[in-house]
Image (cartoon, rainbow, N blue to C red):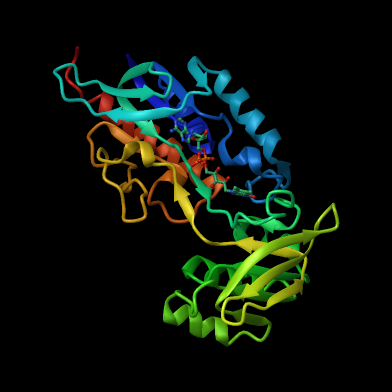
Amino acid sequence: PYDVLVVGGGPAGAAAAIYAARKGIRTGIAAERFGGQVLDTMGIENFISIPHTEGPKLAAELERHVRDYDVDIMNLQRAAKLIPATGADGLHEVVFDNGASLKAKTLVLATGARWRQMNVPGEDAYRNKGVAYCPHCDGPLYKGKRTAVIGGGNSGVEAAIDLAGIVAHVTLIEFDHQLRADEVLQRKLRSLPNVTVIVSALSTEVHGDGEKVTGLSYTDRKTEASHHIELEGIFVQIGLVPNTEWLKGTVALSPRGEIEIDARCATSIPGVFAAGDVTTVPYKQIVISMGEGSKAALSAFDHLIRLAPA
Ligand code: FAD
């Protein structure tokens, strides 16, 4: 069995594997897709001390760094089930889609999250070419440009307020007949001169010129009329979904499905830790996930040195 088995190969999982391996303990990392969301990212400008890099490059460097250590890397392995330790051996078991299973004294769960998509024509084709999901990451790229934010919940309204300070204009588009964000955020939003709010609107298509986004179509759900907005950027803020479907009924999850962790990345199951976008940690970012993964591995090590000698 492993001392530490990391599930997930994004920034959080890679950091956890490196921190664990540096303690000289038996470490494995299993991931559906090594690199995680970073693979879907183009320019990254907030990875502190590296002013500019690109997602696929950073993903390759994450893997190279992990390979510097004595870590078993199992790529293209999707975890299907967690069986927490019950027996005297104290081993947790992770069962994979292909039926294989791995056992470990401690686990670091780092399966990340995915942005909910609008699922309209043009969205995929113009991803990273005007369609964005992360205002902290990509907001500055739209300085002085026209943008839309899709979604009037807290994250959409926060994104609109954030972007309004950077871009020329923000159109906030909400499907429902009213915004769902906290009133204090809505008040702030309404005070901004360069924000237009459109409710009861269904986004229908992202338009582009082949290279980048040029506009957005939506249908007014009250009148059924179709409208077109010319703009350069669209921030989709209709939910970040944690990849925890495989954990239901085991580790404690928040109402949003995130793994609940404490300040040391401990979950509700002793010996099982979690890190990064899959958890309740506030703000989902690469540097934050790396810090969290490191913390989870150190907590796993701390747990191991307290176990009774075998
Ligand atoms: P993830 O990166 O989501 O990695 C999760 C890992 O778990 C993957 O290896 C995945 O394959 C694996 N996995 C999932 N389910 C299973 C399973 N059942 N079994 C096994 N493995 C599984 N952040 C920034 O800081 N700066 C940016 O510029 C930036 N730009 C972004 C642009 C885009 C388009 C996107 C989508 C995100 C961006 N982010 C950016 C956010 C950043 O990518 C995430 O915060 C970060 O990748 C989270 O790391 P993580 O390791 O927690 O999870």
